Amino acid sequence: MRNKSIGTTVLILAILLVFVYGIFGIPKGIGLNAWKTALTDRIHLGLDLKGGIHLVLQVMVEEAVGAETDNAVARVQADLQQGGFAAHSVLKPDPKQPEVIQIQGTPPDRSSDVRSLLDSRYGNQYTVSSGINNTWTLTMNQTEVQTIEQHALQQAIDTIGTRIDALGVTEPTIQEYNLGTNQILVELPGVDDLSRVHDIIQSTARLEIHLVVGGPFATEQAAAQSLGGTVPPDNVVMAYGGTEPELMGQYYILQRIPVVAGDDFRDAQPSVDENGRPDATFILTRNAGDRFYQFTSTNIGKSLAVVLDNRVQEAANIQQAIRDQGRITGLGKEKAQNLSLMLRTGALPASIHYLQESVVGPSLGADSIREGVLASVIGMLAVMIFMLVYYHGAGINADLALILNLVILLGFMGFSKATLTLPGIAGVILTIGMGVDSNVLIFERIREELRAGKVPAAAVDQGFAHAWVTILDTHVTTIVSALILFLFGTGPVKGFAITLSFGLFANLFTAVFVSRHIFDSILRRKQRGEALSIG
Image (cartoon, rainbow, N blue to C red; front, side, top):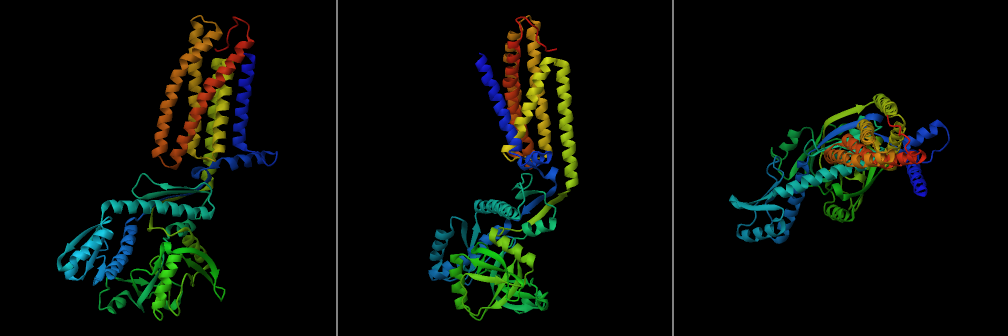
């Protein structure tokens, strides 16, 4: 029996040491600052404690649907031409309905062949219908629209996450915001440069290369007038957005479908041109490079426009065939770095609108830390003093269990590199309260058994046995509630749920296993019939 008691004591001490290591690791030094640094390296502070930026973003997913149908327009046109019945035009007639494609001018005597081709190649994604004057309409299925929108949202989350990682932000929160539709929650602890974050996150960095149809023109109306007053659906007018002073405020007419765009870019790096001015060089993927080479080979002498976020950055003549490398000039140093970063990490599938944004200052974070820690310390000291006064010697047992419970909880956070938030501190305080509640249940049951005339050993045994079921029930119901908060809550709420859940598991171990072991150790040292100090 004594060997079993020694083994249990060793086990408890080993667990204590393991979780102390989880809190501090191995400090690099022996001073107080070394231990403080070790603690902050293991347990990171959340946005509300460290300060930082809080954003709620709306992803304009309909633009991703429009981009998909833009690609489909080019494919349909090529498929019809390859099949031997080229259409007069393939276009999207209504900008407010990006999921609709209209085909006009196919040969009337080949209607069945056109129907067969469209059904076989696009029937899984689109509903194909014929209309008057030998027109055809492809309407994207609603399930396909929803799939593209969900994919655009997840791609936006992944892309923003990659960009934020490239900035070196510690423990960012980037996830779907369940309180809105197609929204993203972004929390960046320790970051206070909101304009820089805007530049990195918001820009779709959709770099495209279009064939120039005409321009530059002094006004948008002049550009349309050059085409007879109406811009055809397969063309688009875009403003100049580069750095050449003489082109500021000018407009170009471009072919709507880009030659290369988006995922066609494999890499990009900031560089300088022959005059030492910052620019960005890019490399295309193999397939895009082959396609670009074929296009430039057959269009020497014509002009191409580099378009970034729907603004022409520069336009130049094709003097020779270009395969897979190019350069964007006229950029400032920071813009060249930002553009290169965004092209490397991938373009956002749609533009982003800011719904909420706030900057939490570090002074507020310091106040929150100080007040939260002070509340935890005062609460725990008050509880420990109460247990000592009310339960006498048994109160020491409860206090030791509470301290071990706190060590295990903080050690878990250190091992998991968890982020401590203000709600997380609230979870720690609530865990302390639950721990006290468990000890009170056990001690009161032991008191009842003692009043019934049982000897201390039997009273302790029966007290733990009867209280165990109640303790388990209360902890399981609270853990289930915490699980629901974790599944449906946002970042800080999830932090509260995780802290509370693991604290409850730790409390089951300390209040039942550790506390029972301490009682057994005390009883072995008492004479038969000697009273138990439990108030």
